[in-house]
Amino acid sequence: MLPRPFFFAALACVALSSCDSATAPRALPTSITMSPGSGPPPALSASVTGNTVVVTGTIGVNVPCYEFTAGASPQQDALVVTLHATPVGGMCTQNTATFGYTITIRDVPIGTWNLRLIYDYRGPSPSTIVAFDTRITVD
Image (cartoon, rainbow, N blue to C red; front, side):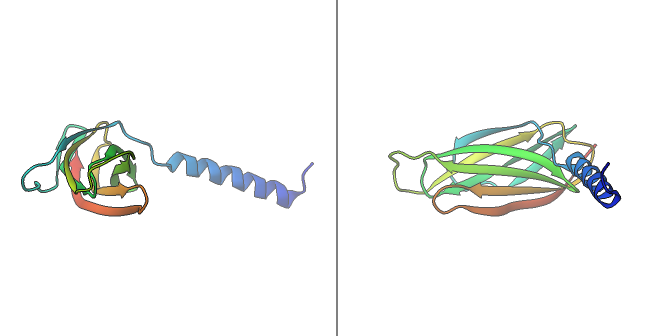
């Protein structure tokens, strides 16, 4: 039999770890469509239809050889949407590039959310920027 103090400490650890896993953010189904930008960039925007949220905007990168992916998850009162920009390597023209995007997030839980769009630039000089922060309501 385990000594009482050890038994209660072990029981508390099991209870706490099960609580943490229940509150871990879950990824929502997310898709992204990219297109080369031209002309003045449109303003960032978000729209809600049912339980689907659509975020549109543009992202600038220092060279056009990037791969883009997106993900979204609810975290407390925020819906965090991350646009990842990852350099693909190889030969690339050394000029700046702008890409338009549409990110679609499905199965968003009902409620009022602080939608936070994060640009996650990966590569030799990684950086993370909060690009957009607005309030949305999903009915």
